[in-house]
Length: 81
Image (cartoon, rainbow, N blue to C red; front, side):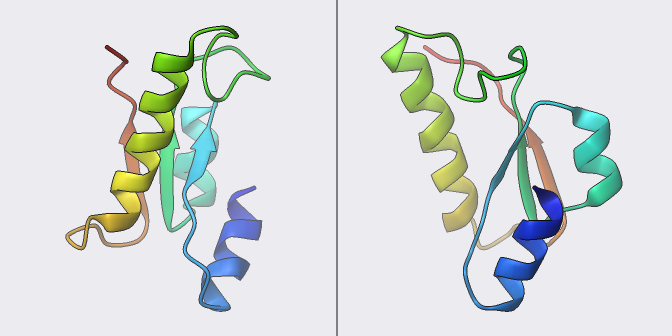
C-alpha cells in the first residue's frame, strides 16, 4: 500500500496509509502513515465499535491537515475514547 501511496502523491493526491505492521511502514516510508494496533483485517479497529473507528479516521484526516508533517511521516495511533 505504501508504494501506491507514493505514486498517488506524485499525481497530487494526498494519502494516509493505515498500517498494521509498524516495520512495513518504516521500511516502505509512505508520505504519511498511521500505525494502528489492531489485528490484521481490522485497520479501523474491532467491529461494532463506531467511536473507535471514527477516532482512527479522524486521526488520519488530522495528519492530512497537519502542515508541520514532512514526508515520510509515521505516527502511532494513541487509542480511542
